[in-house]
Image 1 (tube, rainbow, N blue to C red):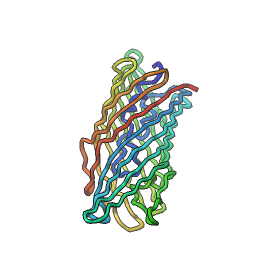
Image 2: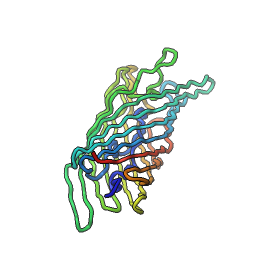
Image 3: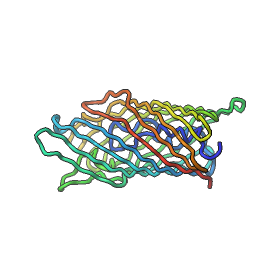
Length: 306
């Protein structure tokens, strides 16, 4: 494919929500930036993505209070393919988190923090490929491996008191994951299916995010040479978080979310493209009292060969 590989890279429209400090956020494939088709050897892609999300939950400490998170994230993404069977991905998020607690009869408690979040390293290894030259299509099966790193602070305080874990910029612990992806790619369209399990370690403050299973069904249709439309269904099940330091289960965390994700990609220059998508929750079975709103994304990417 000339310029941007729309049959794979533009399936990016179902990139997951990048909120690592949200128990119910982050649906789908954590390595969708690597695409669902085999890359070109020596290919390098640089992306800048912006995301906005909003979530609420009843306070574990005070059932009468509601905790809210308003998050804007700018993420730098680097995807390098040293060979046609391997894609390496580096993702560095820079979130701004506005967090507040609304407790009737009490003063509003709020905090806002901006900085580096949890950096992610990942690799996608394409194990198998089936080619049908007559139909101009290919099938790929890939293994995904990676982890988040505790680069974002998890011990921020206000007036000497540590703020809520979900208001922290980082999780404070590693979050390794492993998954499988199947891709069916044609010159004008692509389909992919993925499933990924992510584990969570306990941080220095004794808090552990819930283990999770993310999954997604993604599709892309290239309408014209420079424009592609995407549609998919992404989901995530997460276990409860644990506050081991307090000896408590975080009852207002975790659950299941399904999101319908329409999007589009536009190639507007040699190797330059713009992508946009929105995750629309269509089903939520969350533990306790929680709420999740649509998540909005837009990204600019540049592709070139070394």
